[in-house]
Structure formats: C-alpha cells, structure tokens
Length: 133
Image (cartoon, rainbow, N blue to C red; front, side):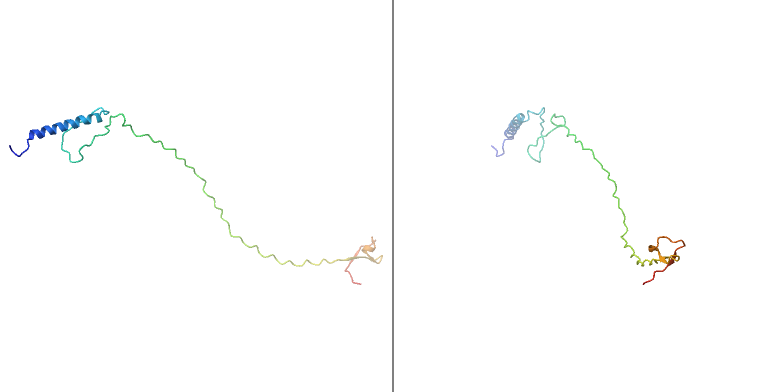
C-alpha cells in the first residue's frame, strides 16, 4: 500500500458533500422560482446567494415622490422716506413797540368845551393835543 490517499475515495466524498449541500440548500431557496447552480473557483466567501433579479414580484419600482408646489410671494419693495434734518426756525424778530397812537381831544370853539362834555357842535370840531392840568 502506498501512503498517498485514494483519489477516487476523496472524489466520492466531495461529490456526496456537494450533493448534500445542494439538496439542503434547495428548501431554503424554495420560495424562489429558480435556483442556480454553478461550479467554479471561489476566492471570496464560500456561499454568496444571488438576490433580487429584476423579474421578481417583490422588486417594486421606487415610490413616486411628489414635491409640494413652490409658493413664491413677492413683497413690495420697502419704501424709504428721506427726511431732511430739522432746521431750527430763525429767531423771532424783535417786536418793536407799537407807535403810540396820538389821542386827541375834540374842541368846539363856539361852546368853548371839549367833546364828551358837549354832544354836538354847530361848527367843525377842532382836534387838539391833550393838555395836562
């Protein structure tokens, strides 16, 4: 006997393990309409399932998103009122004393009396500056 293992025995065991794995995986994939099998060299994880082909019924399109209408409110532009700085009013003009109204007495020469004492005069009244007594 040689020390090398029998390759047919290893091949049979590998075939049984593969068939056992495939048949054990079939119930897990029973909800899928198809199961894909393949043989190849895998350099990554040992088992990577292929998910969601485009024809599956649960592969719905993304929901349609409706955007709310954009409301643009145009406001009236601000109104600026430009004011001039307040100006102090000019000082009032000095008030001149009112001219003293000259008061006259009215003299009636025919009656030799002044107005309030004589109500009427047959002649024209004479205007006389008042005199102090």
